[in-house]
Image 1 (tube, rainbow, N blue to C red):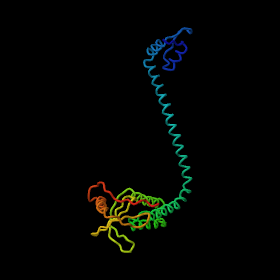
Image 2 (cartoon, rainbow, N blue to C red):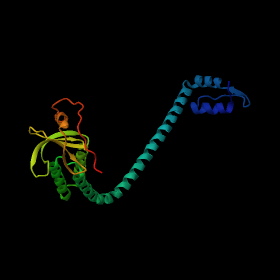
Image 3 (spheres, one colour):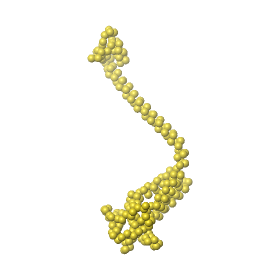
Image 4 (spheres, one colour):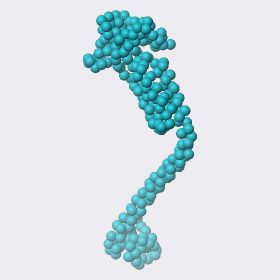
Amino acid sequence: MRQLTQGFLGAFLFFGASLVHAQVDPGADVDVDDGIELAQAAGGDALAAYDAVLRQISGLVIYNELRQTQIDNQLQEVEDIRASLQQVPDIEQQIPPLLVRMVEGLEDFIALDLPFLPEERANGLAELQLVMESADVSDADKMRRVLDAWAIENEYGRSVAAYPAQIDINGSGNMRAVDLLRIGRIALIYQTTDDDAITGAWDPARNDWVALGNEHRNSVRQAVRMARSQIAPEIALVPIPPPAE
């Protein structure tokens, strides 16, 4: 069993409760258990109270260290915000040119894309350009509208749709009523609504409509009906023109 000198025991008991005055030979060793028994006899729960104080102090130290770390992080965030606020004027000056470039890029993208929904997309682009020129619309609202326009264009590439349209099939200037089938951005196929049911597709290499064989008639008609949710989806074989070089 561990042994302590009488001097250390006296200091220990004085700090815990100051209730014990041991009269022991200075050169003698004192048993710790004997000291605890003396403290308990003199002060009851003195050692238990002392242990509780130590545990509380230890907990407060850990708590303070954690709080100090949080305070340091918050101070760093404040400095980062201050630095960001100093850059706001420069960023505000760069937003209008960025919006103009984004609208111009959208215009070029639509011009090079498959010719589907030409009027709808042209009207949306014209409205967006008017918004860019307006002084009554904030830069934040302009940015939101530009991003929305790009999101719509992005969605076209991930969807399938069929809708009625009027197109010039043979370049003669005679518009024909057709059902247009758009498969993402990889194919734009038409089929006339008359009894002949002429089928064709947009050829990016020629930048024009080309006729397809009658063997594609039924599969294209089936795909159109699926795109309109008129029949349940299933596998349909449709012609896909090669991409333009």
